[in-house]
Length: 320
Image (cartoon, rainbow, N blue to C red):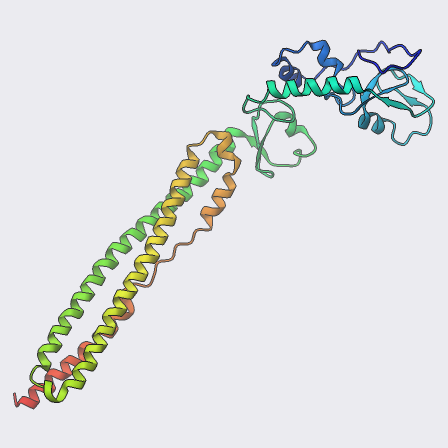
């Protein structure tokens, strides 16, 4: 082992604790000798050295690890590895060991950059899903203090649960879309019929006023203007409804496509932001516009009564 170069202090005989299996497998991926891996591993945290220092007995530790181990001590500072006691709190930086640990860390990083589905912290397979943090974790994470009180389930169970939720939203949104499409078709038909009725009323009105054009010209123009206004209102309302319906249908189409694409994703990618897309789908509220004929039909009916009265007046005027 690389000890700090302390004159007259031979290295202690105690071996390092073994490197965790996940990290050893990761290091093996870059074909590093196990002895070299051990040399670059702190026996306290079992990780590659971070700012290594040598103490009086010759053993090496991360500066943070030895400082934490000696925290609160004022005398008799024991070595965490060989238990040899030092009278003074002293250690010196081990630059060669720091350089070696950095190089090995870079090699391990390169060798393990490709595998998917491994916990970046423990190099274990990601087999669980934490509902509280909405993230995938490994069995080591599950036993940690961080996730111990959380709701943790297997990946397959979490995937099925969220797929059922998304499927429910898909069914609802598809139904909403179908209702909007049917509403649009029916509203278009009713609108066309309404416009035809208006046109018939125009023709009827023009015919009734033919005999009275001289002295009823102003009244004729007034009523024509009212019809024209109603026609414009119907057309305007129709355009507004078409715009609103098209926007709602487009939104639903986009969200449905996004949800359908999400369901097809691999489990890890699918669970990555599954709650976000579910929340967005829950927020969609499609409101149907007021049908054009709802409030315009009464106006047209009221207008039609005027033509009936006009017919009676015209018959009386003609002496019919």
